[in-house]
Length: 409
Image (cartoon, rainbow, N blue to C red; front, side, top):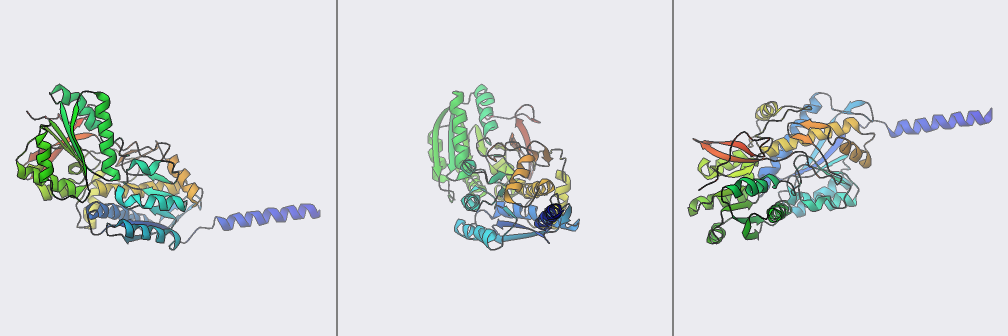
């Protein structure tokens, strides 16, 4: 009798301990960084704002449902301004983890500001929800990260290279110039496109140059490229790099049969405002979910989100990074729905369990075994000018194309 009583008491005590361990918190703290100034502000602020729109909408509905507690819990977004400084970002990431003790850590936009978060999160075994930091090195021997809203840099340029090796070669493209900014994002893309071209063996790379990310004048570089007389030019940089490059290219009067640049397709409104339709006409670029409408199974459609964005009166240009922030929120939402606890390992397991099962306005969410995003692909598109506006058509791969690429004479 005494033994049964003791066993019953032990069972009750164990149940009480488990119940206490699973007691729902008053709020779920989401730690995040954004850059309100500096070279990355134009891509960071839309991510932050898209995430905040999701947080506000979720809280207006009573909070996020968390499976571990079988209830909705309000969200608290703690987002500090790193001012585009990696040193400041490192300090603030540490603060979010060690002082604010956030439940969920979300990196700032882009690979540069994400690069300092990766080792810090790994050291503290804090799972890092990485919206748009695509550098390949982030995912090497690191179980504490997942790329949420765009694919790893190693596969971004695949369709651009395939198009050159296929349609380009048919049109007489023989030589290629590659100019890139030396950071994790564009450096990785340069390495990838270089590999794709060399593997196909159809084109010769006659110019291959890396320059600092803070480069703001490309006049000499454009002249150096022109001296090599390439048929195709690929410029791989951030927003500020693309604006400066395309402006300087217009001023130079140089023309290339094929010209590719990253950010005209990612932040079209920003580029159009600063470069104009003439500077974007004919440019090949990536087509993101800001211009290609996917059918989401979770969250708003592209049109619905654009309406919510405009209603929020953000004062920011709408583009892919706006969607990336909102997509990050949707992934957090689905992660919390499936997680067994707020333990970082449980959160990691819940994120990976979404792979191949989640479709948002950003496309299919698919992770490789290292946490790299391989589902939200970036087809190749080309701009045409339409008065003061531009139109972006998908030209490759053929299965997604709604237009035909035009290669210059």
